[in-house]
Length: 639
Image (cartoon, rainbow, N blue to C red; front, side):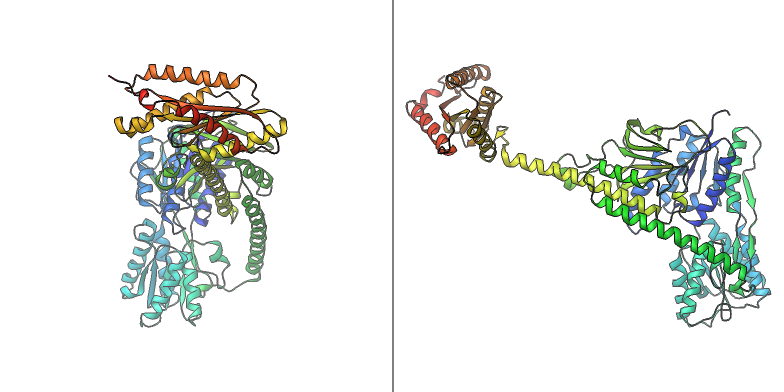
């Protein structure tokens, strides 16, 4: 295949050590072959807010399988069963060659697994045969996980083979998390059972926290209690005492997964299941290894580097968070990201936003209180206000979401991470970080992307708050029935015109208008018809206004017009036009009543001793004098 092979990698929590190790193998293969990797990674199940997980897992809906040649799925890292099932279904429908790890979901997929059972058997047999353990407790992962099930069954098998009793009170089922180890140690201590000789743990996280809890309770490790783990993590290797555990060839798993996809594409025969062997490591926590100066030196070097990197990341995070807090616009966010790109070692970065990211609350108070913003999926089109490719910085006003990338140069060996951009369950877009170890190795990568997301959400809220303020302002100054200024709006606008005329010496025109016979229309034809008549009159008044005029419903059936920069003859022109418009509307609407109004107009210079409301009063008096001369009854049409 001349073009690069495109492989989608689906994994939750790339900041975890297990996922890191698998990805290192995948990256190693991609870098030495004509392969591009697109990794879609939420971080779900780590924050106790269900809405947050919805926003994270939404990144999976972005995947367009038509753009890929194969799929690698770490389904065992996805803690949401529904999301896992949806993904499996979509991958099967895509007909692409797909690889999973240590999974029961193997129908139609290649499965690479590690022989967890044999390795766990070796650990349990070791503590029995080499250390004489008889009373052996067990801390398990969830049995819905095939790896946890295999390790648990290995423990049961060895106990049965050595005719050792298995007391259910000596077994604790957890979720592979550190807190489970601590809780298990407390439960064992409170059980009133005799002290265990050994505690076998299904992974290192639980083993290390159990070890610390037992030590806090006064036990020595391994003198009083032997503790073992599984995974050979960094912390397990560098803990004191170092943990007896199992080393798994995770990097090889990732590498072999890519090779399987290439072989399938090329039509080579492939095994449906590949089994790799794990190796037990007997260390200090079971009493098999003494601490060496070499190990201590390696630990010190590793810890120094991690602490130094962490201090650096915290410094960047603190400064970025402070800068983002001052942002009022999206441009401000983009400027901040640009400044920090080199410090975060981001060789490639794209900020992709839904086309309506800032409009989720656009329909006013109803949408603000009960509307449904974008939660599932993405808009058909996306915008990328910031794209960084090496030394180039540019943007894409619009691109198709089905393309996923706003920009690609067609080269190979690219490793890209698609990370969700959201606020709780509200989808705002996504990030693409390319050819950078930042998402894998930075301890604060997740915190930094969350900060940027929250900053964009704050801007979205600010934009919508300003929209709400504008809507409230319109309600304050506009008459909702007549769609022109109300009294508040007129006073605000008229004051500016009045001051302008005072400064410029221009004359000002004021016309006061009162509708004739509104009560008779309401009494005879109903208030709905009265509202119609008011609307028609408002339309006429607005249509008579020149560009330097303003008009308003002053109250009830009273209206006002104010104009600046007027000249002699403008009053006659306005009132003549008003009369013609009334006649024209009456012919057009053909109502059983005649629309009529009285108008009084004045023109005046604006000097320091002139008050706006005194001018309005003069125009009102002129109108009233005209109105008194009319017989209101003649404005009703007789049939």
